[in-house]
Amino acid sequence: HFQVNNPQGKLVRVIEGEVLDYAVDLREGSDTFGQYDGVVLSAKRHNQFWIPPGFAHGFLVLSDQAIFEYKCTEYYDPLSEKSLAWWDETVNIDWGFDLLGKGFTPIVSEKDRKALTFEELFK
Image (cartoon, rainbow, N blue to C red):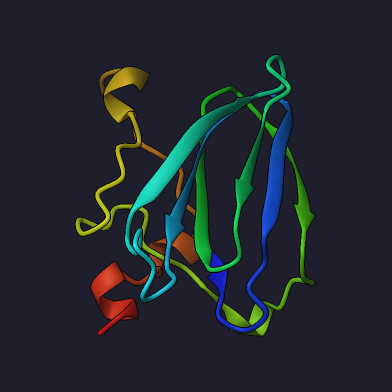
């Protein structure tokens, strides 16, 4: 997810559980436009992940449950929110489903089911 107007920078951490967290650079003209980086955030590790303004943010919960904390640089603006499809073939994020076992099916929110592909967002 990301915001078109007033893009948010986000410092995120997990205070319960474990999450595979990704950020995708959506800043047109950037040297890393369309590329992603990710990290496993864990309450046990006490690690954090910085997602700069202009990046999409998505995650996969690896534990039975997880609690996230966000520190944001801007207020949330639901009217300018958009979603990049988590399964997008252009960005091609490795969500590690093969590590989660045979037959794993992610639970996907309605918002994520309606997300746009990279091509649809930047045509």
